[in-house]
Amino acid sequence: MKQILFTKKEIKKKVEEIAHNINMKGHKTPPVFICVLNGAFMFFTDLVKNISECNIDFIRAKSYEGTIQSSIQITKSIEIDINGRDVYLVDDIYDTGNTMKALIEHLGVLNPKSITPITLFKKEFSNHPDLVYGFELYNEYFLVGYGLDGSKGLQRNLEYIIGLTGED
Image 1: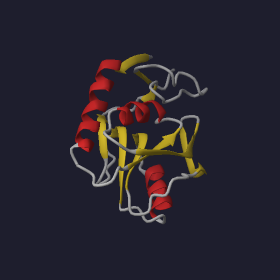
Image 2 (image 1 turned 30 degrees about the horizontal axis):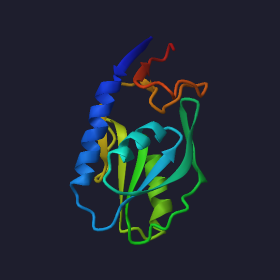
Image 3 (image 1 turned 30 degrees about the vertical axis):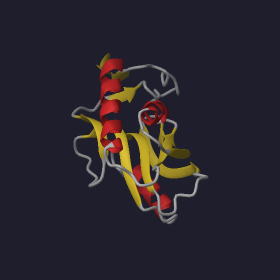
């Protein structure tokens, strides 16, 4: 069964709230925003449009085979120098935290001033002390849309989020 869980309007409002809170930090130098491809691209794009001034880069991590989490592979790293910079690592969802932990370790050797993980969604049982997130999930839907893909790599282009149950 498919069900719209988050509308375009709800997502837009939450993204603007997150950006506002980051802008209020008053960084001395422009922070670096790093998008975790592919799932975070729509969230990332909308987020950085609302940030005062920043540098951007991209990293790719693969941790899912279909809907099953497997080992984490970093298949594309960043190109920008993050030494001494405040870094915001933007991903789609914080589930087990394994992908975020691997990415933070990977980027940490480049001597950033700080690394703050940001996700649009987090599972209720998942915690990270510095995590900035939009929505907390209290169910076991598989999310599709707004950058997140279904089992065949489709539906990333939806402007809203659908929750799929095991029957879909």
